[in-house]
Each structure stands twice: as structure tokens, then as C-alpha cells.
Image (cartoon, rainbow over all chains, first blue to last red; front, side, top):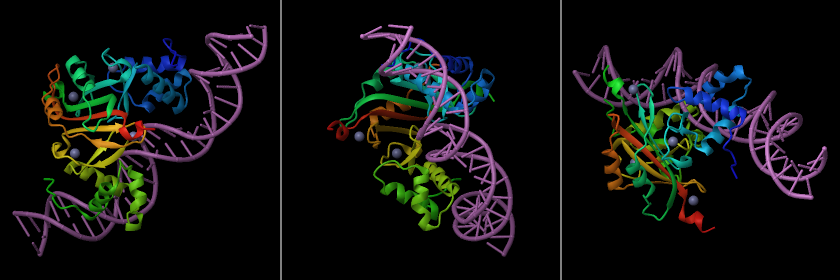
Length: 132
Length: 132
DNA sequence: ATAACGTTTGTTATAATATAACATATTTGA
DNA sequence: TCAAATATGTTATATTATAACAAACGTTAT
Ligand SMILES: [Zn+2]
Ligand SMILES: [Zn+2]
Ligand SMILES: [Zn+2]
Ligand SMILES: [Zn+2]
């Protein structure tokens, strides 16, 4: 079992950085930021990222190959994720909408496939960027 | 304007391959498949892919870095895409569900952001794979 | 304690995915 | 017909991600 309320050293370091960040972080940018802490190789980052995703602590923004901290509680262990993404400033916001989440979690494919998980990414221009 | 009902040579070659494929194709697998036709470099593939996506002829499955032909008509120029993905056999099926599409197209972020586009990916085990 | 097991780490190398930059060619359309 | 836009060919490089292996660490059961 994925026994882990407690994070390992590298996992904690990577999570800290992602949580402190204002926006999504890329794996190699995380790597450059932790070299002072003795983490030197991509593997170390990707391994931590994989575990953090499993635990639901972070999510991967697939359209950007970048990672954000989970700010929601609806998305139990990353089974139901939704994001709002600004195409101008790259801001990402996790959408926590019970109705949306329920609607999609209950959605079933006409062809009989039962879904275990979904990821939804909305794109647009955020308020801040619209002012320009 | 991106005026183009007619595809260029490379675009047509790439689209043909994607349309004939049973599942999603990766860029480099497309490349290997068209080297006999004189296409030798990744750029040529990626350029064609970009245009085909713009035209709505194909979609990118973000979670797989792979490309499928559009089988729907609801997703006008790729503004509203939804897929069902089998985690076992990698099968991808474009979901064409008017209610779902309307629901999501009408969805607005609480924080006031107006969405122009979305991409939704559902994951599960397909019927065929369940039999095993 | 200590052996056994699973997990995490460190490390080197390499694979897979994608873009930059620049020179030419082709198509379009005023 | 000539300028603009689009598409192509090509070489090089950047970015993202995994393979493979050895060592250390943390549990837990004997
Ligand atoms: Zn979350
Ligand atoms: Zn913005
Ligand atoms: Zn489509
Ligand atoms: Zn399947």
C-alpha cells in the first residue's frame, strides 16, 4: 500500500517549492531550484513528483507539463481534477466546484466504459490579463 | 487568415496516417512512418500537426502526447474536446455528447474568467480490457 | 538485535518530445 | 506580375522523461 502520511526528505523539498510557487512549475525548473539542497538529477525530481501526485498533494497540468499544489479537497487523490488556465499569463487555478465535479464523476460513456478518473482543463484569458 | 480547406502535401500525408490509425499516434512514430515519402525531420511533422490542430482535423491527447483524428463535429475547431482513454490498452475515443459539451461550454469560473476552450480527458478500463 | 522486505536515494546514461533558426520554394491574390 | 503569406527542407539544439543499477534507510517479524 502507498503508506505515507509522512513525506520523505526529497518529497518534502519538492512539495515545499511547488506550494510556495505562484504558478505551475516545470520539473527542470524545480531541479534548478533545489540543487543547493543537494538534489542533482532529474530522476530525483520525477520520483518525488510521481509520489506527490499519487498522494494527491500536487497535480500535473497536462497541457503545460507543469505541476501545481493541490488547493482543493474535492479531488480526492486526484481522481477528479479541473483547472482554469490563462493562455496569456499562464496562471493556473484549480477549480473546486461540487456540481461540476459531481456531474463529471457521474458521467458515463455511452459505449459502456466506466470512468475512474478525469482531468479537465479550461482555457481563456484571465481578468488581470484582460485589462491590458 | 488561416484560409485552408485544402491541405498542403505534408499536412495531407500526416493526416492520412492519423486517420488510418486505430489509436493515437505519437509524433515520432508518424515521422518514422513517412520517411519513405521524403519527410525526414521532426519539424515537418510538428508543423503539419500544428496546422491540423488549428483546422480541427486532429486533436492532441495531452496526457499521452499523442494525436488522433477528429471523429466528431461538435468540437468546432477544437474548442470543446472530450476523450475517453483506456489506461490498459491506450484506446482513445472522442466523446461526442451534446449535453456534456453544452454544460461545459456554458461553465464559467467563479472568479470571472470567461473560457474560450476546454479539454476533458476521462480515464478508465475499456470493455474489451475488462474481459481479461 | 538482525534478517528480510519495501521504499527512498544517488548517479550515470539515454530516450522521447519539441522548438529555434535560417535558407528556399510554392501558392495566393491584388 | 510581383509582393505577401504559407509551406518546405535542413541542421542543430532545447526540453521533458525514463532506464538501469547500486547503496542507504525504515519497517516489522522473528
Ligand atoms: Zn486538487
Ligand atoms: Zn492571465
Ligand atoms: Zn473532434
Ligand atoms: Zn482497453
